[in-house]
Image 1 (cartoon, helix red, strand yellow):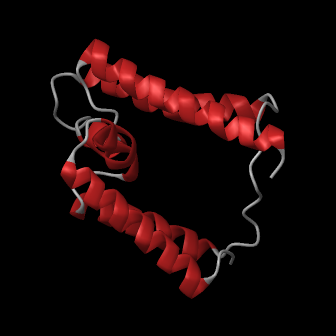
Image 2 (cartoon, one colour):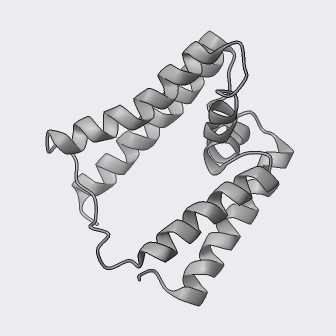
Amino acid sequence: MSAIEYGSALGGGILIGLAALLLLLVGGHVAGISGIVTGLGGASDKGWRLAFVTGLITVPLAAFGFNLAEAAPLQHYFPWRLALAGLLVGLGARLGNGCTSGHGICGLGRRSPRSVVATLVFMAAGMATVALSGPGG
């Protein structure tokens, strides 16, 4: 990894942490994606939730569209594995009462014991999956 890649990762982490802190301090809301998306269905406070999710989708699309960012191509991954991975992540978020962003970023920042356990389980499961199946297609 080059110094630029380390700086990019550090900058992205700082921005995510600041955004989560700002949402908590200003709005009193936790920036856990699964909770925000789940609340779109029937919550009375849909406005900020919809704005948050819209930003999650449009900002990366704009960054890629203007060639400000690039991602690794997915052609060498089997589509069924990507779909299965997405389903398992959703199931895990439901079973774990939150997703990695909610527990790993927001929960750890609030010193939640449940989030410490959940984050350790997420990380161990991810490492075991890569060790058993390999990182690619």
